[in-house]
Image (cartoon, rainbow, N blue to C red; front, side):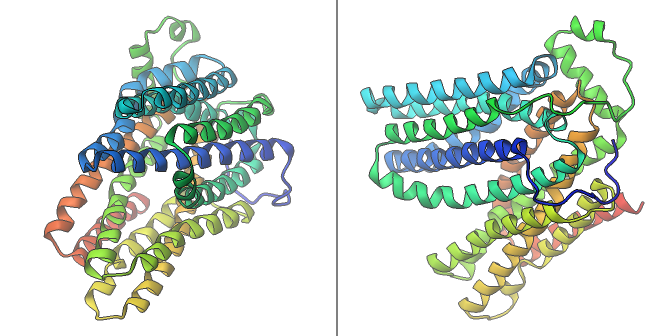
Length: 420
């Protein structure tokens, strides 16, 4: 299945399948984001330790790394619908247990929180990978663009609202009660996925078949199965290229995640209110980008669309430090970064969504679990590595120079790849 050419269907004519999916995803992302905010704040308040907070942040990437072979094996060999439902039920059971246990033994909160985060990371890995691998059977070609674009908008909205509402709720209820609130959101998500038709579309392999027979796959160990998945990625040159560049972007984008807050607060001295406006602008940009993407007629190959927008991102990355070179007022600096974050948030939707659609539609269904699991783990691991790397750089070098060099490197990589 190749996604070249314009869609003929009317945009935003959303069927019940799309509504079920979007409601389920919004409930899951919003609830999880609120809980993550509450747990992080609770640990920070209780321990007063950056190290204690840091351990909670690295838990997810470490668990994902260990789980990668298992997630791919299970998703590629078992029913996606069963995996999604069992994963959701396991998350709900963990939340229920946490809410009860922390109310009885609050002094053991740190062990309980780490345990909960490990369990939720495990279930989320299986849930997310299975659902991602099911997209081509859940939705037909034209729907994939709409549902991916709208999902990006809803995810951005949920991520934007969750800390705001979470901060209010955090002051009103205990951390155990917070877990019960998240349990309600997970119940909504479970109801949504249970109503989805996982066989709505017939699935055909878009890429050439590999030489691995079904009988051979049936007798593979988990590690052999994982190695075959890596072998599949190596044989698909475009897929390998997409995964390599996508993981690199996660590394380079850490420059914004680390550098922008640093220069806004430490160098440019923006107030808390001004800084909050710049942060909100990114989420607003992603919401706008998702709506635009779901409505546009894209006539080029999705990978080409994505990589052309990466060029725009690299240019924006190169100029993000411009205010450091001028003596602008704080209001002008705020306007600059609000506009910048809205623009980059919008453009990132046109980077991420096309790649997601290409992978959902073109990866052999027998390998989707392994491919998505490998890509997710690589991206998750490179983000903290990039955060440490750029954290050291911004402590010792000029911020404008770091952004300019990073943008130039990314521009050269993508330009060389597109026009060798």
